[in-house]
Image (cartoon, rainbow, N blue to C red; front, side, top):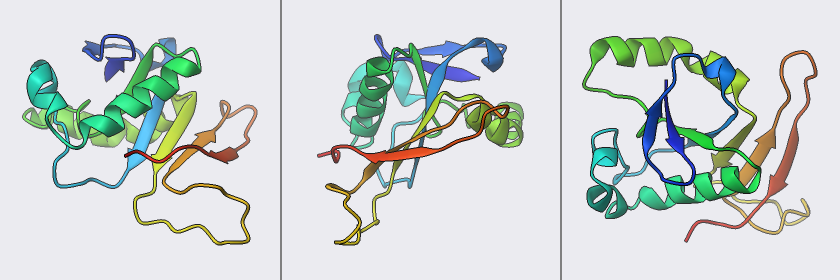
Length: 143
């Protein structure tokens, strides 16, 4: 599993995700997302629209004391069919191991009576399977 270091924004390979505390990012893909290959060249990655989602995810994770984040667009080497297959088969497990899941809901419109101040970003906090729970809170929208 590849994770993004929230301070350096560089990818790090971890062999056992259970040993790491990380945030995970769930979103709809746009037309200009950062790929695994793009992450090798920061200038290329920073020039893509999707980079802002990665940057905001890492800042949110770091604010929670997490050193790592996982974003599907750039943390899976899609040029390797073996890694792609393993990633698809492991994704549910990776989500269950994450400390928090940040969701970017591009097309979601809040109800006016919901009390939610902004749309777009939500954080879904969940504990390990032995103490299930969910807490949703709105945060600021990506520019």
